Image 1 (cartoon, helix red, strand yellow):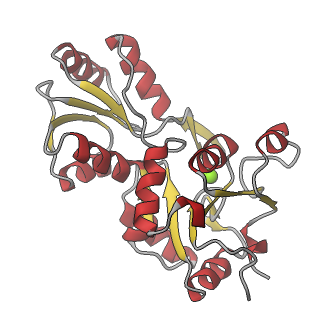
Image 2 (image 1 turned 90 degrees about the vertical axis):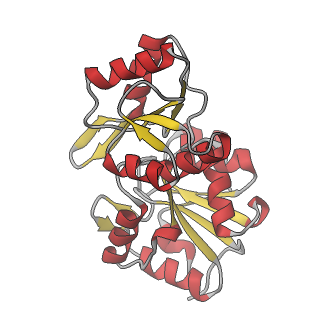
Length: 259
Ligand SMILES: [Mg+2]
């Protein structure tokens, strides 16, 4: 099996590209194996801060794509690295779930559950409450700044969708009358910079493979990577945005990356 494209660095979106829910996209395991056998660099990108990188790596491995935590870049890791560069060790209040809090602690932040913080970190949080919203408000009134993981309005789940981080961001912005200073997940260049650094490849030699035009393709284009849109996820073949954005390649699925 040979890889049909010359790029050295390969960044794969996960849901809709490598797997759909709990099912691997047919051919994905063979494609990743062929890329690695050919000496290409492979990384996986996710906007979801709900699971740890270890969880994603375990899921990929279970589905037949051997992966380690270092192969996975998600928005919680990116936020922690980005904020560590801006304000290392800062006290933070996190609207988020335990893996998000753990990532912040692992990067040296003082995670507090009161308003005596310099940053309010907003993530996808299925345990979001009035009490958290109030702490965020009081923190901002005392000068705390706002930063968030991902801009997604909803998160696809089996049989439909559930509210994602956009809901938490909107609630905090509404009551504080402040805007978040950065949303680090796709389509922000911040997540791509972290990912390219992890890959060890420049944008000019790298490609992003994904199923979402408004995140994967827009971000790749903005940052000068090649773009491969796969139609195995949310984008329908007759979507008019495909012609407008003109990804470098539009493929039925990752299966046809090798031949
Ligand atoms: Mg996707």
